[in-house]
Amino acid sequence: MDQIARRDQRTLALQRAVSFLFFPIVAPIAFFWARVVKRLSVRDADTVRARFAELMNAEPGPVLICSNHLTLLDTIIIVWALAPLPSYLWHYSRFPWSVPEKANFSTWFWRVASFLGKCVYVTRGGPREEVKRTLEKIAYLLRSGELVSIFPEGGRSRTERVDTENFTYGVGQIAQAVPEARVLCIYLRGRMQDGYTDSPHTGDEYSVTLEMLHPRTEATGLRGARDLATQIIHKLADMEDRYFADRERSGRPSIA
Image (cartoon, rainbow, N blue to C red; front, side, top):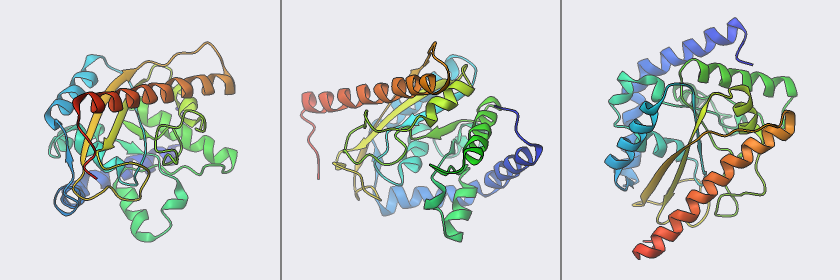
């Protein structure tokens, strides 16, 4: 699946190069909005970043990031939480590609922003060939040493928790295509975040936890993709359960 057309290879290489050139301009604007305008913070950020570096350096090979999803800005928070902004200039492959729904980026502004933000569009429920082409691009990027971030639930959770019943199998198909890939599971949640919203709550503090998963299955085809996706979703659900248990034990209430 990682053999993609040369045209797509050139397009991805161009997108990466342009994104890198504009990163010193675009990234500070995004992080200024998050840190100053929205007054967001990441709890124990240094610990989270040290954990990320430890997991990434533990062994070589492709890494797919999978996270829960409650706001439209979760990707920005993940990037902010994983490493200091300047470090991405030295390790730009660790600035992850994202896989957003194409329909959410219909205006020229968001198309440009997503191009500079290293996005590869997916059209859920779209033509089979188009979906296949997107999966091939993702597999190619992973095997090229790039991080790719995807929300395995397929969208923002409507249940306020990780949805273990209704989720897509796309992440399982990616894991099938790149069986040597590790999956970096990330659970993030603001103390004010009770349900899904477009934007994080102003002044919120985010908890971010990381765990590496090596999903495996003997099944093939759709059954195999479903099995792998289920393992990833259940790992995120377990991390969520521990988050709420830790918050209850510590007596750290919501600040909403």
